[in-house]
Length: 399
Image (cartoon, rainbow, N blue to C red; front, side, top):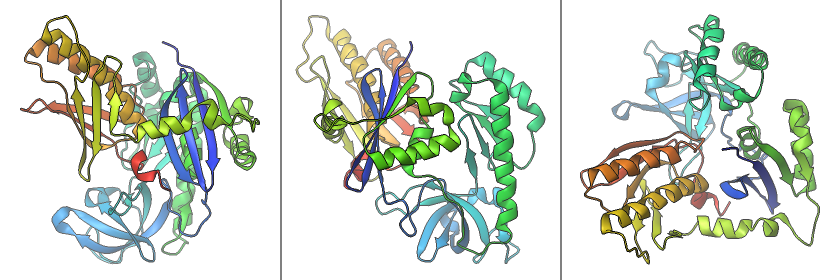
């Protein structure tokens, strides 16, 4: 099924809201501060020369300072991939060591940001990564194309970096992707050369603002419009696209209608309000209760007002199937991540339960962020995990 995509960008006070629309429905909401140039603004993708301040061997972690007073969590399993600018001890990692790290996760509530030795250089069609040296492809690419890319890129296999081909590569000739990989390699080599002459706490790569990254991560397939309401924001995006993605300029347009702003035209305020509510109604009369906690998110499925003349087992399956579709949508819309537990209506029929799980997996595959259905517990709780990178919507609403 073909998907028509649009991107809306609205600026309200010091906040920029990005909405991804697929087939006339808002499916993703992102929010970021417009004060990107403020001192020590930490952005996903920034690369610093950090200093090891503390090592917590009991939890396999270290705390690395990327500028005075800002410590970040670092997983010690990444030490084998570390690129040191100054090494002070004989152990694999010592207090005082200086190394290249990239911000891989924003601060979440009381947790500090996370940094990684796995440096990612992300292009439109490919990613160069130093923490994994394999040649990989997106699972959303056709199998034949995945195999073709692996054969074509086999000669690039090395011990310093790996390559991952993104879903957007499906839309362009292979030569364009190969050319981008060469450019990413050049950026990586230049970074290593520059790092040797820079002081500790230097920011070697300043990632673009979050709203630009969101735009860069949108699937190009079916993308028809990038609609921006604020003139200054439109100019910033125009400047970025002119340099990085000139083919997108024809899709960019400035929206000018003070009598009907984008927020009214697309009911964005209502969508945000509903995405922040714990209660979500299903079309069949059932409902979801979505409750984020410090450790995980719990989603409870209720039959509610649903009534059916069918036998109870079939009725419960119908509610659960609709709930599975809506849960996958809400996870993406709210940017829920980490551990997610779903309490579907209990079904004693193992065949019907398997049907539900199979369909749920299909809905989860539509999410661009890695989401896995892990298992079903003895209490029939379905356990999911979703890659945690950005703050969920309920934490950033008051930016």
